[in-house]
Amino acid sequence: MKLGQFIVCGLVLAGISSASYAQITQSKGKYTFRMKFTAGQFGRYVSEFKQAGAGGMVVALPFSQKVRFVRNGVANLDVAMGPAKMNGRVMGEEPNVVSMQLNASGKQVSGAAPTPGISVFPTTPIRIGDKWTGDMSLASSGLGTNEAKAVYTFEKIGTYAGKKVAVIGFKLNSGGTSAINGVGRNYVQLSDGWLVGAEMNLSMNLTTDSKSNPTALKFKMTVKRL
Image (cartoon, rainbow, N blue to C red):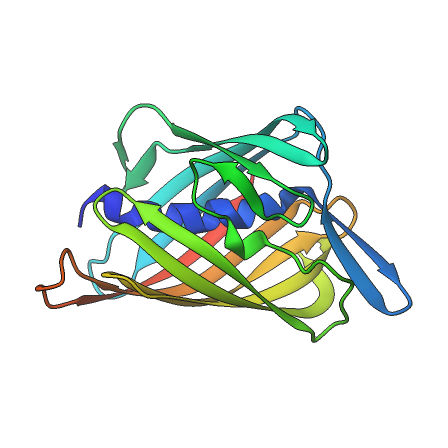
């Protein structure tokens, strides 16, 4: 499998990292999730993809996100991904940098990067157990573009890696020539909203064109803040 075929996973996780500037507040049993932007904010992460089965590949993809400036409540960000390592071997030399604009709910306003749907928050206060939905676009070299639907659940307030967090479960489904399905959780720190970690079980029915038989692939994905 070519490295470009893993980039779609990296874009999904870049979407998760967009939650890193969320501000989570509680009032009367409900929680409000909002993006809190400051020029110069920076988050650095590493994601890891492990292909299921004997001899499956392991890909580590570092990525970072920086707020360049904020205007009228909309943040202008640069997202850098890579270089990746496949089975310990570095693939490429320079990170791939894309730009996007996000509003206070985490919705993409404009930019070259796919919509970071996993981090789109509800616009009204919610209780533990509530669900909401979001749309996003997944893209990668060699795979084209897939439109995806995500369903999120505010599962609980808990502890992860020693931090007080909001646990957000999600289910991801897409169509297109390479269908993607996944379930996972994001762990978002309450005190400052930084993403502490995330995990996902992902399956892909990979095809290169409409005439090809799909190849079923399964991955275990994790993301950690560095």
